[in-house]
Length: 204
Image (cartoon, rainbow, N blue to C red):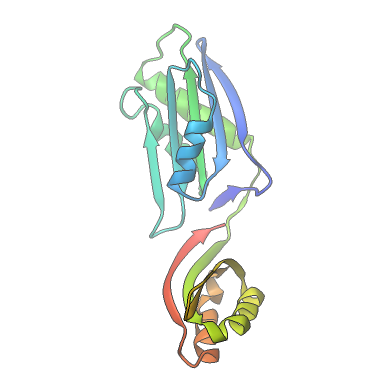
């Protein structure tokens, strides 16, 4: 799997096909909500269609979705999604804005145009191999939190810390092959008082 380089930002490529302009925007996203925000943010004044697709996460929790946005069914969103899956690019969304130029492309032409626009923007993007990580949510007693926090920071990235009256909840990201060691360590140093709430895998 591959992801956009962290410094890439948004990549925009414009393609003209039979007088219609297709403006493809590619950006990293970590959730469907971020993808929806991208769709809303992409300039589209006067556009005929704003079609999109995203691919997020790792199996078995991978999420994908696409939209034809008024184009004939299957001619816009699915070809965009196919470009992402074909390149094995995850945690990314592509929005293709179409400005109609007066020449109808037909179903096959639309599929090639939207798929080609998505491929063109991927070609222009700096990509790197994805790293599979585990994101673990756990709680520890308040009186153990300081020591555990130091250990967690040495083992991975602490993404959030939430203090409660009797326990502290941590969300920590570690390489997937380090998850078992983290679990064993936290349970050991807290004499079993820690609780692993959940764990998910994701590419980063």
